[in-house]
Amino acid sequence: MYDLGQPEVRARLDCLMGSTERLTIESLGLKHAAELFQALCDERVGRYIGGPDVTTLEALRDRITHLSTSPPDNRDEIWLNFAVLCAGKVIGRIEATLHGGIAEIAYVFGPAWWGHGYATEAVSWLLSHLAERGVSLVWATVTPGNETSVRLLGRLGFVSTQPPTQRRLLSYEDGDHVLSRQCSKSA
Image (cartoon, rainbow, N blue to C red; front, side):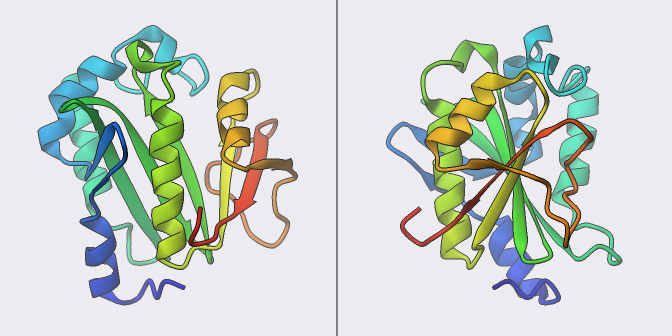
C-alpha cells in the first residue's frame, strides 16, 4: 500500500509513463495543453460532467498546473493525471486520486475518438498500474444518463454498488451511479 507521507513515493507515481497496443500514456503536463484543448473543446464532452471540460486554453493550462502540484499538506491524497496519446496525438486524459487506501478514477476523451476502444484501453492500463502499486480497490462515479461510461466500466470488471459508508468518495454527488472493482496484479 502507498505511504502517502513519503515524498519519494509521490515523485515515483507522478512520473509514470507507459503504453498499450495503440496508446502512449504520459504524465499530464503543459506540453499536452494545446492538443488536449483541441481534443476536448466540444460541447458533447460536457454533457455528463456538468459543462465543458475546458473553456479556454489558458484555463486548461491553469488546471494542468494545479494538477501537477501535490495536494495541500492537509489532504492525504496522491493525484495521478495522464495524457493519452494515439499516434503521437493527445486524444484525452485519465486520472486517479488515491486516498484512504482506495483509488477513484476518471477519464475524458475527445468525441473524435469515442467508440474505438481507446478509453477502455487507457483505463485498463491505469487499473494495471494501480494494482502493481498496491491499490486493491478502485471506485468510479458516473453522472446519471451516461450509460456509455457505465458500460465501459462494466467491461473492465466494475460492478454497481452503493457509495461506501466508511469513507467518502471525493467525486460522488447525490444521484451518481457508483461502481467499484477489486484490483489484482493481473488487472
